Length: 334
Image (cartoon, rainbow, N blue to C red; front, side):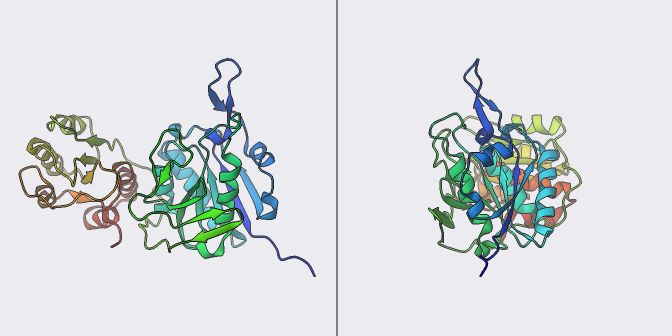
């Protein structure tokens, strides 16, 4: 009796630390390994899934722009549309995983899950975490229970929803956390443990043909007025994310500048610079959250500012305005 066929997983290699080796002259890590060479250094994958490797590039994650993000999204959707593909893995650098994975969460279709992974240590490090992360990601992508789960981030054995995944440390291998609702599961050896369902997620339907810009994030700090927002307006911003203090509060002049932007037709997102929780209308003093909401600033749920910018940029690129854009940013009820 023949063994059952293994699930097919398409792996898109884009570069990042997982593909890097120390430069022989400087000692600093640089891109070096193709997807095929990473697979050669990751034994046992052929017992988990039938792999289709796509060598998209060797690009440091910090170099990824919206054209590249949209191109990879196209590759993801093509894979999801293939009835023989059970799951998709994207291998990339960790610098911007919290943003790219969320973009692909917005842009991916139903069906096969999309799993984003990488490494915190380069391939020349004796403690290279790339093979373990790639193996765990393939296990998650091949798991039929995660069909329709959208995009997930898997590193250090932890399975995180893309809209909540956050890098919390510059070097630690367990850097990625989900500070609002926590992980949805974990990978222990050959076992994928699921602790909860992914739940509803933001969706953006068709791929935008392009993304307008600039769309800056203005981070509010102590002793700051509205000048940075006014600079953004003068520089031709198409939308602005304002990362306010606490529950979404700032100096009254910052709100005045935001009102000037909204009067000029620019969407302004009301976010918090805090890593967990959401900006709200809890306070009503001048410059506080309730005043921002009354002025028409768009809430973004628990999205951190970098993710809110992704949603705003892709939403505008897709032609969303008014209530449609507001719904995308606010997200589904928790």
